[in-house]
Image (cartoon, rainbow over all chains, first blue to last red; front, side, top):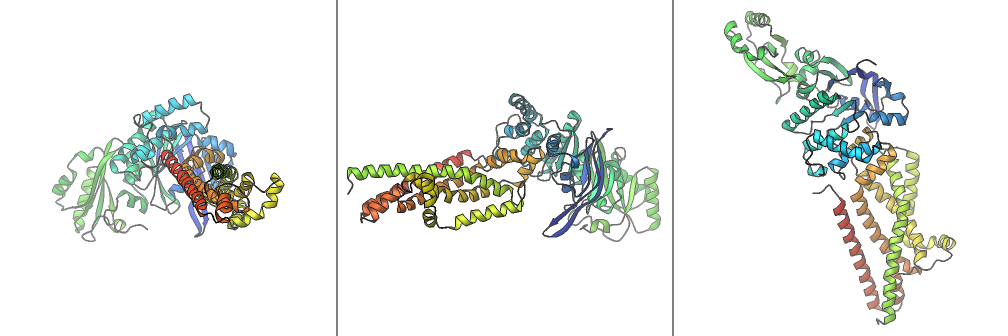
Length: 343
Length: 220
């Protein structure tokens, strides 16, 4: 069976609604390996939520195959599909907890459905609530919990049947940045300690950078780019990926003139040196910092900076040569990529 | 005016009214609950969309609901006679009451079940829950407060209908109000029976609201 857990082949999904025929997904091919934290990123309406719903057949694909753990879900008889879904945990943007059940009872739900003996289910639920850090809120009802706590309960519930994979559909989109970080940290721990493969759907590059090792960029029903997060981050191929990596902040970075821009990508080594100061001094180039962001990605300092260079061609060449000499990754950019808002 | 006999009549009336109301509600739910579940499940956004079933059932429900109760009461007299051998008394009134209330309850239940957020049902499906178990373990429990609220409205409506049944010899407080109060121009008797009805409705509403609040975990 190899190391592959989920394989999606030539998957298409067409909706025939009142608004006419809508192609949500078109010929999608993906392979997710065991132990991956696989990110799927795209703008809203790109089809990413439909894609993740196809992975457990909450949404029936119009065409194609969804192979989970070596078996095509689409050919599966209903009963077997229901059992298989127990090994595919899922969490949602709106948490989707049952409002009339306590946190404990919510976690018990999948085990009740699967007829796990009561005592065993009880012990497992308490263990899971402890794992997600909610052992003191066992008896609380969802209305008494904060957003982050609700998502923790949802995670505990999704883990109850020891799933092989956890699908996260915009799981942090309704949470504040601080809570988002904690939830992502928890997901990473679950991946490391329990060996659960995780699929993360999001529209925030930050989420991908924080926990994913691989990423697929989806745009207008197609996967436009796929690879290691590091590679996509440093050398984004598609327009949409570049747009997502350099976020739009109130209309995006401001261009003062039509001059050249360079995007410098830092990896762990270079970010600790005063790169820009050195560059400015040694090249005698007055650079303008349009955008800068550094953070901890996968345990290494990672970041990027968008520099506006002087008009003068020889200075530009000098700066590029200096960057090459110092082994700093950079990419030439034209600003209008950032100035327009995609769709 | 209020002889001892009258008082005994009144007490029997209360007993009969309560019996008719509660027993009809109970029986009507046996039919109404599945109707409501079926209407909700076969809806185009339901668990198992099925337009023909939804359409036929919905039409039948609407048909019965659009017949005025007093007409229904008289129309089903032959059926009641065939079923029970009589058309008089409290038990005989239960038959038209159930026929009238079941579709009403069906719509009530349908509405309550549709209030359950689609996301919660999706979460249940993602955990490998079969459609039947989703109904039993998610839809109905999650809709419980709304179902209880609907039940209280149903009970009070049926209570009002039992009074109407007094017109065709149905028994209960309604009969007393008509036979002693209305036909014999005994206004005090009529006032007292109406007052008793008001008190019973209030009691039901209070008990129902209390249970609804007590069981709903959403508001804290």
